[in-house]
Length: 253
Ligand SMILES: [Mg+2]
Image 1 (tube, rainbow, N blue to C red):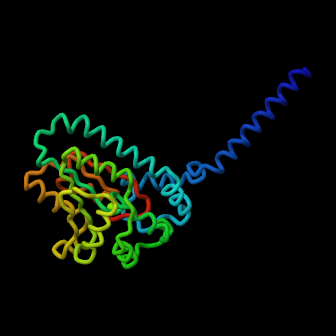
Image 2 (cartoon, rainbow, N blue to C red):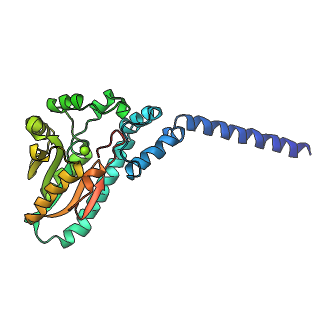
């Protein structure tokens, strides 16, 4: 009985220790500690949460950690891996008209990163500030999203015609945007489409659909379409495949 009791006590000590160490692990894990924020982010990325205006205040630390702590980069890498696999299998096997083989990329938080700006906006916990964002964009200082720049170069060197479509105002931001793209290594794209006066007031879906339809009418086949917003990927002529890259900081309708 003495040995059995000692064994039982030892077992309990080990079990309590294990539980304690699990708590220690979980206290440093944003995934477990912020499970409601993870659920919220998943709803955003799956397009189940729509028309939200700000990141929930309790998710400020979670979103900041996600965007700057490595997981965002890993998620981007995974999307680019999927795109690369798609190109090297399905696309190249059936691609017979290189001159009209197109890809569509969004600009903000797809080609260019605005994380530095949104850090000052508490990673989206603050409401959208159109004046502040325009000032930021006018500086032309957004760094590239490295994984997407790598993808962009692969697309261009493979022979695809890459079109960039952005909801940025063309009248006021054309120079800074083209300069920013150039300095960040985005050279060799076919054309940058910006929102001009004839598209003012249109939703992103309507504007981007119209541009894509123009390309299709010109004979282009859109093999893929990459954006951080569902409004980049919805609507007409969306492309053979669409690829949503993560962005839990803001929603563009
Ligand atoms: Mg965007």
